[in-house]
Image (tube, rainbow, N blue to C red; front, side):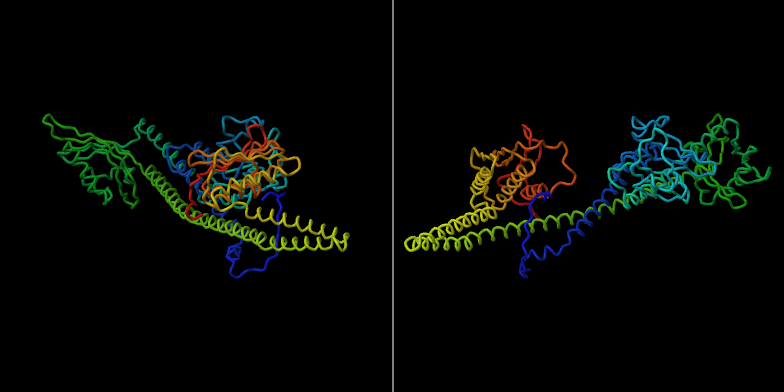
Length: 594
């Protein structure tokens, strides 16, 4: 309801048999709070699902991941600016991988590309507001940035900060990055901080995984250089004599002292991990038989019990008859790569598990939210129906009881006036004035009755009620109101007719009270089974964007349209002012659960 709308309060004792009393036992504020919490959780879950690919997919770069997270975090918190960063493991600088338009026209702080570096101070700490979270490892928000203890002002050219929220990305007790947001259209609250902290935990795992990948890639590059420098062990096996010759790099690789290897295939097998021994033997046999190339990875066990991973590649040398006589190959230690792969796999499994968990929670939250929304709609419908029934009952009582009594009093007054006209003309005049007052009270009672029960129960009721509304509005000073209906629109559902009338009544009331309209046109047209109710006025210019907090009148109109399966549109009229339209199905039935 708009602030200027009239509210009439009546003190009525509770009726133990009235269903409205049970409905009003629900605390609207508590219900609204629970519904808002469900919606917020749903929004946070949507963000986690949206960034899941960027967090799990190994093809995403750190910059792409940061960009995806920033976009979702800004949308969730309604923030105008922000950045997502990572800590350079070598220099310790905080590298902002994504920056919003705050480094565009609004801000004159220089940057290279889309990233900017925030170095540490000589004492190893980070300066200003963004550095406070990195120094403490704890996120925070402030809606008065200039009053925060860590604030030291802004550099020249920086945009003003209205509010600020930041969360460090921490994994294994180590800060690896940061999510920072600024200038939300509203104040930051605690739930914003908790939501960004959840995102930051996943982002921290993604940063760690990417660093593992980078380390793995660097390791592979170093191996390529080592291979060029012959820093890879080579071996040769004389199959007929069962003699194995290793290069000098292999014995240290296998944890053996120089000259300790006995140079036989059996000696080599004793170095292989027992669980991999059959695999290695089968791979050698397949290569000798010519069934498969020899390119395998397996574990070895050093004399001190240390388990390492090695990769072997070999070619089989054959004689003129095609018989295998030798195998010549290379071997390298790939333990670090295997550890990195294992760590990455674990991180991916953790991320996938969390996404699955959150998806399950999201599904359950959706289920509860839908149930709550259905219950709310049923409750609203019951309240609306009870209100309409009560208005109808009061209208009938006004007409049938109070109206009839006033009519009887008016007749008696008229008789009294006629009798006094002979005996006492002066008293007869006073009696006539009393009759006029009673007649006026009868007319006002009828008007109240029609307002409370405006629509007749027949199929022509809506058209008659809208015509009466136009005539009543036409009688207001300085207001012209018309009703047009070229062909009959028969609405057989009485409840639907009442909802449509109330929409028109509210639109006319708003046009006069808030739009200051002078001319109002009500029309009702039909096209087969579809019909359109339209109310157009020449009032004040319609705003380009409706306010976020709309009046109760607009909300009730929208709900009434939803109840009858209609579509309500509020927009600027053809020549200015406001146009309210409701498209509906004349033969539509009320939806289940509404």
